[in-house]
Image 1 (cartoon, rainbow, N blue to C red):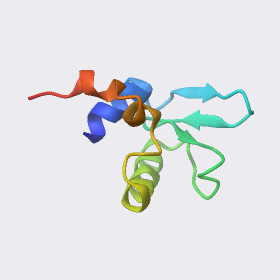
Image 2: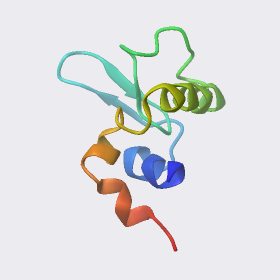
Image 3: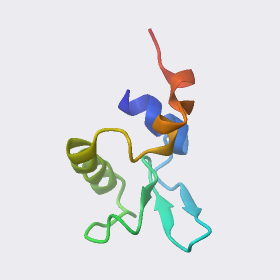
Image 4: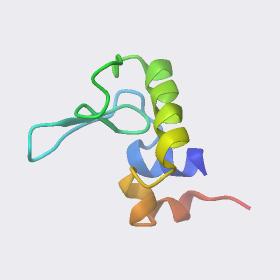
Length: 78
């Protein structure tokens, strides 16, 4: 599930960046939003993945758009 969500969010690209309308920035494999991850270095791929795990442990997959809009499903394998 995590890999499918990361593929949908960033194409598994550590360098992926998306600037949102409100000025916040989504970065990394899991497209973590700068508003919610001020304590981590989102330019470091491994650190971003670790931060994503902390977020997941607290909130499940609901913070990720790829989960809520179900776009991750096309990346699931049997």
